[in-house]
Length: 291
Image (cartoon, rainbow, N blue to C red; front, side, top):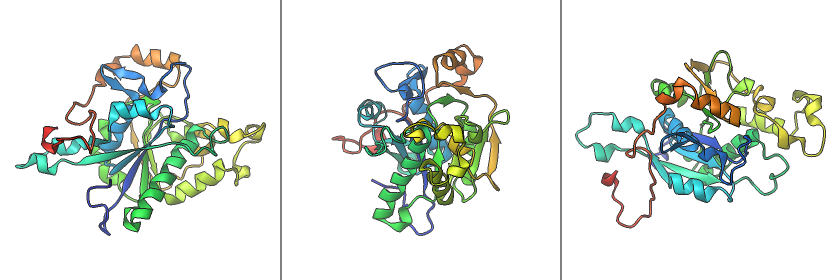
């Protein structure tokens, strides 16, 4: 289900992409790393979904394989509420609330074990978002993609004033102490169709001249590509950059312990059940007002 009048010719579809298929940590648990708790009753994947909601995404596409998607879906449901609409003074608030659909995208079987790295999870999520929406209507096709990572924690509410900049043709990047996605940091950013095609050709090794020779050794080298291998070539020209005051990767046990031992963790809280809780479109007796 696609909502919010996206079929209007003047609509701007910003699609959120969350890569949760490529495990990066050394936790070694039976469940996905994206379900790591970062605050009471609040997981890393929920933090990434909430970031996409603050960014103004009309749809959110979670890239996760079928072996982990049932548990993630059991936690998130089928949509999240836009937090901005709960902070507005409105005589009919229940009629103005905006639901953001969640879609779960498995990596294609052909790519598994061949190039199912974290960069490809991002690009494949953008590809599926475009193909699904474009088949419904050309006006539904996403014009920009915003990427949020469950592999890091940072203050996400700060992007609220920049929603118009994110929902524009201009690229948007978060930065911390000079580091962005170009350095391999798990910081939110956006890209368009031109950026997608450029990065896709690198992962598919059509542009071998842009990949270091030592990374091309062995069978299926694309399986081990890191973020900076591909996204150091991301297009940042004329992009808007916003600095985040603190940032903690949680992609391994030591980094996770450092986050839990920091004072910054006290700022991270569940956004509230009115925004983030399990929802289903087809639940019997569901009424939007009960949120």
